[in-house]
Image 1 (cartoon, rainbow, N blue to C red):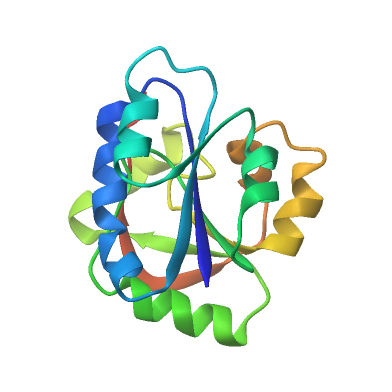
Image 2 (image 1 turned 135 degrees about the horizontal axis):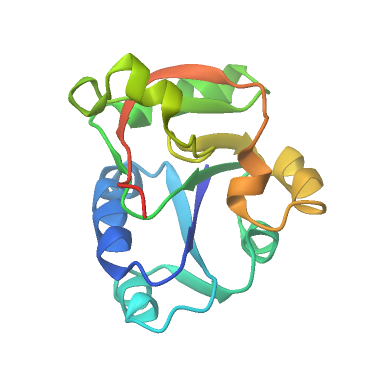
Length: 167
């Protein structure tokens, strides 16, 4: 079972797009809970989360990790959308692997090589699948989901993600 954590700040539209891509995982019984970790939004982020049936917490990702019910966590940026086929790939990964994993960028979403090299790289742009135990240990020193994901050695999943637009 998988807990999804989305750290957000004033991104109600992006949150709604991300939550819509998770519906299949909830229907299949793979997504156990979705936790929206809000950093002090002043828009309607809390209403979007509540209407979608998410757990809404204020504070950092460490608070969300503490409330997660799944043994594996999926960390996403608001606005990111998982492409069809992600469920089987994540289930297979969590059944046999212990290391974290990231999704592959959707082919139509890939920037040219030089644009990728010279752009600011966001650690959560491609999502992160990580065990709750490892995330809990990393969250002790990380102030955000982005900091938690930065610098981790990961496996590349054979499932695609449409990356959230930069802010």
